[in-house]
Length: 475
Ligand SMILES: Nc1ncnc2c1ncn2[C@@H]1O[C@H](COP(=O)(O)OP(=O)(O)O)[C@@H](O)[C@H]1O
Ligand SMILES: [Mg+2]
Image (cartoon, rainbow, N blue to C red; front, side, top):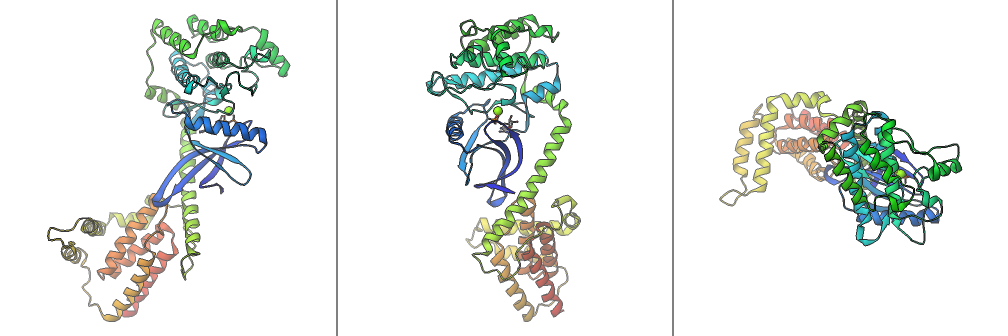
């Protein structure tokens, strides 16, 4: 597994002009985990300046229809941007899968894209132009959110540096050498609207020159002639955004949004709820959603094990641990597939142990009225609950067990790192410690074994064996 600073990257999820986009994880103490996306850049000077610009600008954006940027970092030879991970597809894939997009779906998507563009155009009075609005840079999440992304060439209009953008979307005036303005983004939204409505590419050709020629003077078919479920009023909006003369387009993204909303009203189309949009897209991607969920949960297990091994390795260099601390989980950790654990949870013992555990926790957190920690009560309850075979405990046994206990307490902090399973393993381990203290060795041994089984931790296994040996020798 590859690491980018404190992030573990697992899979390439996108590739573009500047570098790769990876799925990544942040994993931390106490089982904290978060899936993220990391975008890397090529290391040339030109790429570096643009990438820094992208990182700095996107970090400041705060809008529900814009992909969030959290962090920026550097490895030996790459820069990277850390973003929220969108569980979903890009709009290009959505359009090519659904084919004939219904009008209400079209309005839902475009209204959100416009909200994002309006935000960017008015951001801190900087006259920003996105320059790369296209269906691959709009992400659609399974839960129905629409997010504009990729601010790789988002710069102020009329700046010193004026990147060209992606051929096929570049407005005619830019091809003619006039440079980008915010009106260029309106053109791009025009191309985007046309492509959503028709599921086709508007400007394609044999080569770049051919495409440029079509952008400047090629015929633009009204979308309703390709998709007959589209009202002609929508054609008018699209064609106005696609005026070759910038002055004839909508004067701003806000004006375009107003017209969209007005037209919806005229066509008697109600704004769609996010939940309904989510159900609509989910139907088309059932397999993909399932697949992604499976992939994510497998990755989560893998990185949890990776992280706990790593942190144990780094710990063992500081601590003098005399046993082999390499944990190799025997099988994929899964509570309900772990037979012994499952069986255990079904026994009456579980309730008793849970009671003891909870009482112990309570006693720890709140002192009793008399000011003394409620240990007396606790002991009473423990002996009531856990009395199994009332054996006489001899001194030798206590000696063995207390040396094991010393070891137990030495290890009991910080070895259970990571997943939910690890937390359960730790809980059961701690119950084992309590029972050992109460001299209930048989149950304690069983608990340590179960904890070792779930966590795959050698230390815990060692403890279970030691207690086993200790008690065998005495009996
Ligand atoms: N935050 C994200 N979550 C999920 N997928 C993403 C995310 N960001 C980008 N991607 C995927 O990676 C692709 C490329 O990312 P993008 O930022 O557009 O890079 P480029 O500048 O190379 O085009 C996107 O089209 C999308 O499929
Ligand atoms: Mg992109």
